Length: 87
Ligand SMILES: [Zn+2]
Image (cartoon, rainbow, N blue to C red):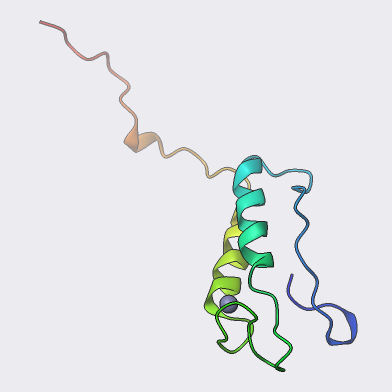
C-alpha cells in the first residue's frame, strides 16, 4: 500500500474498498496513514520526522489490511451450548 510506481507513494483511499466490514475503522486508519506522508526531507515522515515509512504508517498499514480479512471462524469451545440454570 505504501509503494507506488517509480517510487511514488500511494495514499490509501478514504473511501473503504468493497469488502470492508468496519467502514469507520478503514476511514480512521486511512486518515491516520495520510497524516504521516513523506516530508520534503528525503526519507523522513512529514509528521513525526522519523525515517519513512514511520511506525505510524506501518501500524496503519497493518490495521487497514486487517479490515480486509474475512471474519475469523467461531471457536465452538468458547460458546455455551447448555442453558444457564436459573435459581
Ligand atoms: Zn510519521
